[in-house]
Length: 305
Image 1 (tube, rainbow, N blue to C red):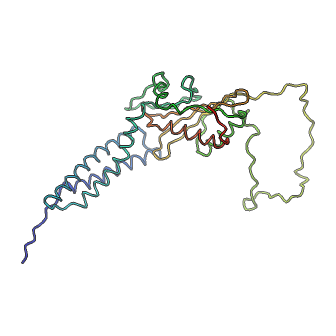
Image 2: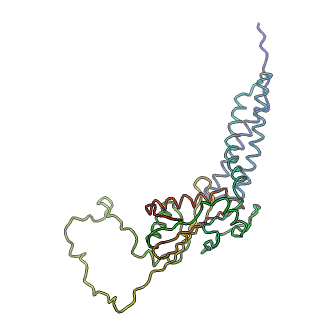
Image 3: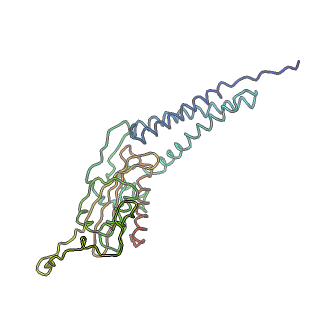
């Protein structure tokens, strides 16, 4: 009867798979609960950091399992591989976030106008937590922004303020931003909303047949006397405030857009801020950059610095 030596089992490999499952479940549950609004951002960060520590431990245990498999043939190669994969699923995104934390300036409030940033119409609700937070509008933070994000500047458009405001609202609506407050908007957009196309018969709306409808014929009205009275001047200044959440992690962000009409041009400034911590990981700069790019496209790219 041939002798078959019994291979030992690697305890490190078995625990790498067990702890890897727990760490991965902890990280995903924390992000999911935060995304649906059941877990605050500071608590989410704490849970993800705990999962990261466990992932480092899992990676070390999986390396020990591979070492024992190579040297003494211990069982546990599949368990070590599974633990390593689950650890990397956590460590790679956290490592990317950590690199942005180190390389980018520690600021959480970005504005295209460093000298005179737009002021919030409604101050964002900041809940104190274990994460330190400083004043993002102080001069030191603005100097950091000027050095790190020199390309984040306002836009000047060759057009009236009402036209630019309508484009701003359209882009914000496409991004599903939630309006919070505004100044000078109602007088500008009155009567400028794009006409809604008539629905077909499937939606129950009337379809034009090309014939005149006497019941819907316009009634004559006296023409206003515009020679004696002064025309009402449209405002040359408007501010709109929005709030949104980042696509993947659901990080709350507050956005402020200021429009100023100067002769035949309109200047657009933006401000974006996150609500938790001292560091936005570059999210606010990316938001402003992409929004202004979409606004350029909406206004046919007629922008200047």
